[in-house]
Length: 333
Image (cartoon, rainbow, N blue to C red; front, side):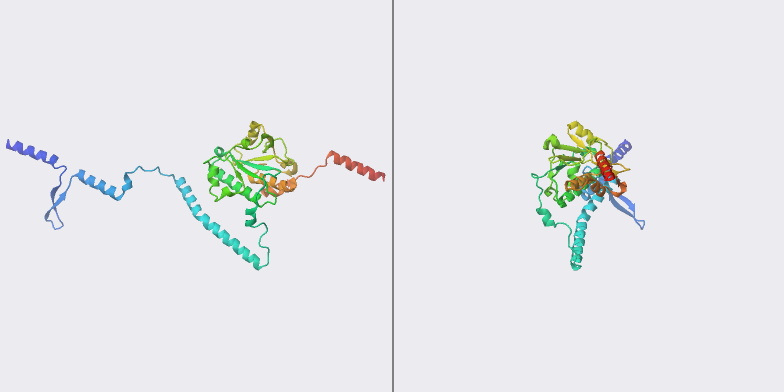
């Protein structure tokens, strides 16, 4: 009985000592026995967890989803660009200043166009304008972010062309979705709200009389041979690499407004596509508005890679009659 009681006591000892610290005899480097205090595995694990929490208090917080390699690369590229942008602008200012000093030393004209102060004082007269130009920017959902960036870059070009023109036209950027991609890319340009441009998130049909609107689209069967006073010419702000072909034409038909195309085939011989960028269409309108002829304007604006050549002018029937009468008169004389 004593042996059984003794064995039962021993068998219960491990369970009682599972959560206690007990000394353990081990041999040291000299081979002598020494006691080492050890704890249970549960206590050791709890100690490790506590040390981990103390060293990294955020380890117990939920982890954010990891970015993909492409996303990290894109984010890093954007951060680097924001850092370099100010440095780049500063270098450009220093370069312009050096050119100005060199021009003064050589006795050359300092500037060809108006000064920045003069440009700031210029204000477009919307009341005395003969025509107006609208850029329809309601295509956020139809463009990827890269194409939206290209679209906004073309808007900057349009603003610069109009600002430096001797005869600027009233310019409207409409259909801008609040919080959309176009607005986000525009906001990267400091002070864009101070441009001499009217910005609006409303549709152009809500801002202008339908009878004055003319939507410019290459699919139209109507040719724009002259600019009419009192008309509002709408240019679609869509950069889609011809993925949504005919969309602006269908848009004009759906709203029941007039549409027209630039007279490219009437003045040029073009072997490539006749699709122009937003700023190219605007530049053509601006030059014709200033009194320039269609053919030289189109030859100047269209890039050389399109390989355009001027189309020879064909004599009209009236001209033929006049010419025949002149020949007859000369023969009789």
